[in-house]
Amino acid sequence: MSRGLALLLFLGGCGAAPPAPDLGPRADAFHYTFEVDESLSRLEAEVCFDGEVPDDLRPIDAVGRRYLRSATGPAGPLPRDDRRGVVTEGLPDDACVRYVVDLEAAARERGGIQGAYRVGDDLVASTAVWLWAPHHRDPAAQVTARFELPEGVRVSRLWARRRGRYVLDERAFERTAYAAFGRFETRSVAVPGACLHVNVLGGERFVMQADALARAFEGSGVAASMMFGRFPVREVGVLAIPTPFSSSSPFGIVGRGTMPTVAVLVGERATEERLMTAWVPVHEFSHLATPYIGREDAWLSEGIATYYQEVLRARGSLQSPEDAWAHLDDGFRRGARAGTGRSLAQETADMQQTAAFRRVYWAGAAIALIADVRMRRESRGARSLDRALERLADARGLDFDPLSAGEAIAHLDRGGPPVFGETARDALRSSDFPDLRETYDRLGLEPTEWGGIVLSDDPDAAALRDAIMRPLDELAPLPRCTR
Image (cartoon, rainbow, N blue to C red; front, side):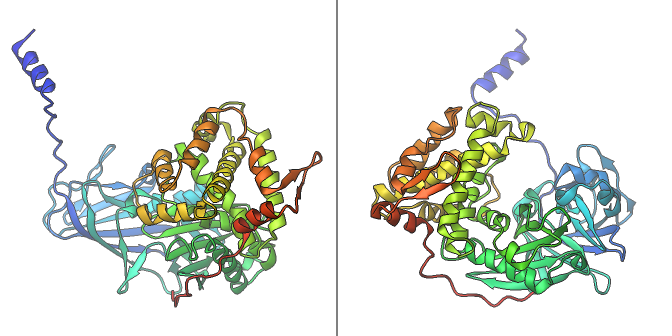
């Protein structure tokens, strides 16, 4: 053995760590100015740094590399590197960098809501397409942004706003936000404890007017407030995107940037009544009640949202409690018939490849119901899944670090027996759908052979059902909301 190798092994055995790579100056404060052209085909960004300039700029998502057309510094074009993105190393202090993004190219690829998408004369373009940032930055860096737009063109609210500028924190660079540019109408509506900024894209395609669309989302927002007595977050941007393939709402997605954004497809011929009673908006709003949970644990995040899409619509008088129980039962039946016959843990891990969404979502919802019933019964009403989720939200908020299922469950089971953990552990290991028989007995739910469900009149069962579906007595006050 050579002396050099022996020394290396000795140092390794003593726990010495290899030297950290030199990442160059760290960005502590930087400021964006974004401009788009009249046709919404091109975005130009200027990033100005306070003090030393970091060594590179990178897109917040790798897809953004496809659409970068140029980057320049004070002395001209900047080099690009496949790994590092735009190389800014050696620029003078307080320098500014300009980069240009081809929005039209992104829209032609039709990346959908998660990429770029034309809606008539408006454009959906997520931050994955156009936001670049220094790779080496202080997580607490002071970052602001402003938009300079052609007359009549606006951008949907996607970050928090203070003193006329947008304020970005680390979540803006770690999570995608959904943004829209165009001449669309915006309505800001108040729900308990929060403001919803509803942006109506391609408005001429909707049968409903913008005011009716906003009222429908307001109703869904009030229902979502029936979990904690307030909407889960203080502010959210909503994109209402028309689709010809539904008379209600077939799909939605949540962005967890500095300020949550929710993009929702809405049927062009949907009515206010149909949209207000739709499950999709309530499902997406329910996601905001939990911190970000990694996709490998989607059974938990999607299961909770799927359970509450029915419970909260009943509490918000968007459907009857009887309909809510029937919809839950129908979902459980469909979930039990779906999947590839493997354990819930395996189904979740491969869900994107196998499309076993129904099995994963509804098995997670079954776990939520089983745990909620056990919490309420074993504590004589002192505990519930509502209160457990509120503790989790208070403890973790909208942290940008993903939360594992194990970490989330530890919070949910705090203050009592590990009900959620026990229920989840058994279900994750099994290839069978979670066993709901005991829970149904406690609730007085009697499934019929031909589908559907009968509610018993047993007073204890009825009281438990009512405790789950009953509207909250007190809600947070409505804030003043301005765009």
